Length: 120
Image 1 (cartoon, rainbow, N blue to C red):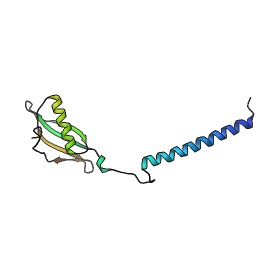
Image 2: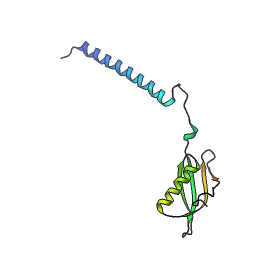
Image 3: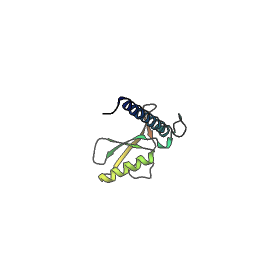
Image 4: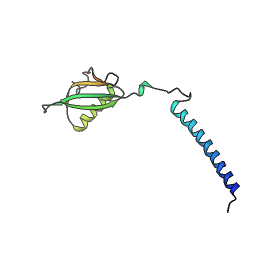
């Protein structure tokens, strides 16, 4: 049987160790989330994702279809759309491409380049 005073000292010692570890971990987590300077978050606008909507129809269909992609820019979204069309072996006629403006909560039309035959 362990004496009562020894149990209390072990418990208090464990509590102090756990508290010190928690404080150190909390400090490291704050540094990881907010960067090296506390309170200043690093925001890189290059990493923003935008939603693009391709409104198109196939040669043999009567109706239009929409395909949505999350991409950093229009060129990246166009590559994804081209890849999905090649994978399905279809040649769509693109009517318009739109980008979602999350601040104005509306779709804004993107000008189409005529270089790519998939985007007429």
